Image (cartoon, rainbow, N blue to C red; front, top):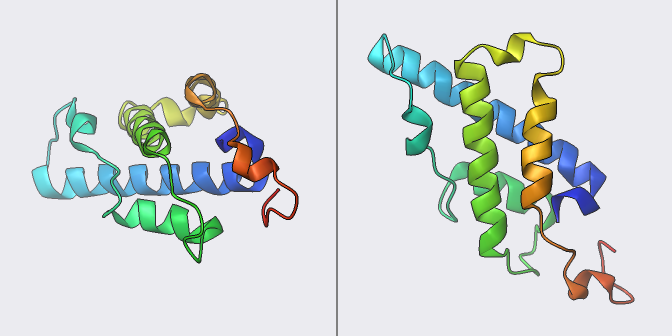
Length: 122
């Protein structure tokens, strides 16, 4: 679904990068010398701040049930951003392209509900 809504896609990736950078900063502050592999501890669930921000951006009245697959893909995206930032790949001007390709492959088809006449986002 991410690829179907370009303005949501941009917001999605901005939030992923923001939360990944925050997680890296917290890891550095907390541990002093954090270990690789910490990205496996990052999670996105319906009870997390990241999920709340993403959901509120386009689903303010909670009209739509957010699919579990979206949460899974969001978690993969967050971990990919974290890993790239942690390893310094973000110094390359094209560093996000690899992440975009990974997420694009995980994306799901647009649900039929979004194709109905009168759909508020369609």
